[in-house]
Amino acid sequence: MDRRAFLRGSAVAVAAVPAVSSVPAMASGSRVISCRPEFPGYREWCILNGDHKRATVYLDGVEQKSAVAADEGAGTVTRAVRTPFGNLAVDIHKGDVLEETVHGRVEIRID
Image 1 (spheres, rainbow, N blue to C red):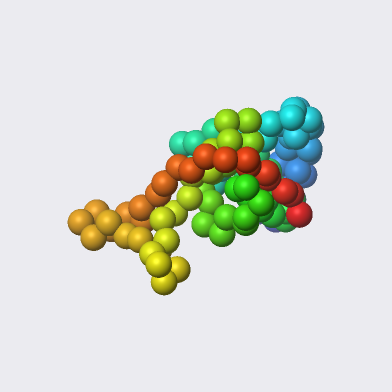
Image 2: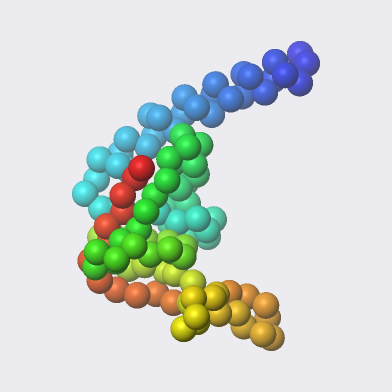
């Protein structure tokens, strides 16, 4: 089996599995989504990316541009901290982007 035939076969398998398994996640009233592997909802985010879809997170009706994770049921959004000028706030000692968890009415829209 050459490399192209292998990739074609694996692409079909990957496309077939998420379509079936993503139905319960979307059917429940509360969505959880995250772009971080250590957070719940990472699998759902990967499925959306595989289908070339985009999740937009809203907190109290305001779009969250730098959301890392969102949970509609718990009403939480984990997002990157922004400076007053709109830049990402960075921990100068570690080099990590600072994050905060905020609470409110969370809505996740899939486009």
